[in-house]
Length: 217
Image 1 (cartoon, rainbow, N blue to C red):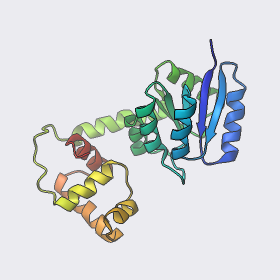
Image 2: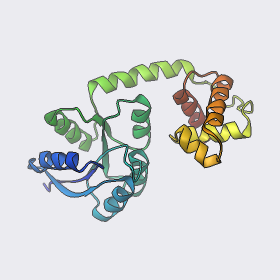
Image 3: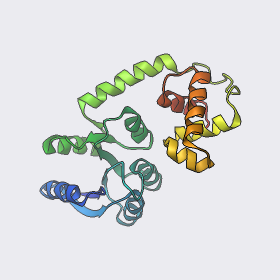
């Protein structure tokens, strides 16, 4: 069989070099390209059509979560596995929602990483047991917080609060929302407090889930 064609996406050149050395040492894998931000990742993915992309999240030139969504829209057969330092349930859920087949932390051992990404290529979820446990716990928690009726009115939110909530649901930070609407960071935080109170949820992540559930994004 032809070797698995791999694209590496990370803004740290030294980490990419180490990862490339591990991948190159595998008889069933070959590195076809590297990128250091999300935009370059999308361009190279469309050009090279890799079988597998190992994708970082936080990069100065383009968010890896958004890049994952765009890559999967353009190349649905390409497997994307996020490889990150962020042990964050919200980013984990966002990555899976955007089409990632796995979410691995960079402190993982190389043999475990290789085993999991080979599983991802077979259609399995490349998630360590610890993160899988966190996902189960989050699903249990959300089952008690999400509304059960999609027809429940959301009119209690002002138009601007709905705009802010929609941005939160896309993963935007308070600073990015402030810049988007040309308002102060203090005003954004005030809107968020109002949104949480009106929706009767406890966290920004619950509010984002609610927004997606209601079809605001």
